[in-house]
Image 1 (cartoon, helix red, strand yellow):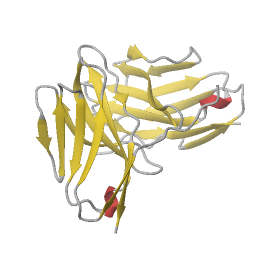
Image 2 (cartoon, one colour):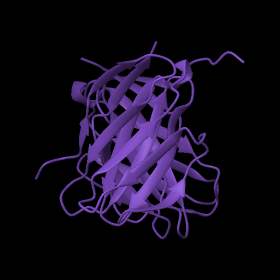
Image 3 (spheres, helix red, strand yellow):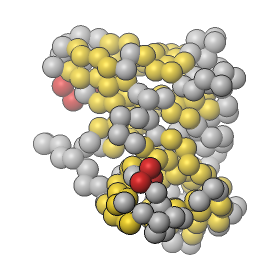
Image 4 (cartoon, helix red, strand yellow):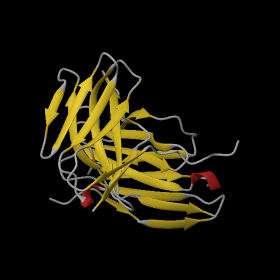
Length: 114
Length: 113
């Protein structure tokens, strides 16, 4: 079956702009989690959605937001971009939620803020 | 302050040798542990998981050992192959309604042919 699909793969944005990233989970999976990966901080949890509800949120500023649709697809949005937001943004899909069932990651969206 | 890159522990082995990658975790409430492999330009790939009611679990060429007393996790790869070269991360999640994975810093494994 198809894996986790993230779009776009690469993105270049200017400081102050906003960006929306998309994640389509594996069919039948209802949980989608988002992570930020940087050389300085490693992999850090952003938030997790299950059946359109946010169940957990990491320690990121309010500029980072997300949502999940009824078909389990998820989007994350970053407003007022800063240079430090440059990172690989990863989405993970699981049936019941990371920590309960196996989580599968997409290839990520590489965001560069200039 | 200035951010610096993570200094990844590295492990270099010869093809065919066994590899052992270690990970320490800090949350004694963690009850689910996973090893991921990440190749350059790709997302983390699930390798094997283990729950806190077990101390050992085997997969194909991989074994995970969990020592809850010292909060230590290890991944053993048998007959390491060049295709195993990647960064390996351990991840943990706490008990109860946590729903997030906390990742270790990762170990860069290089397999020399």
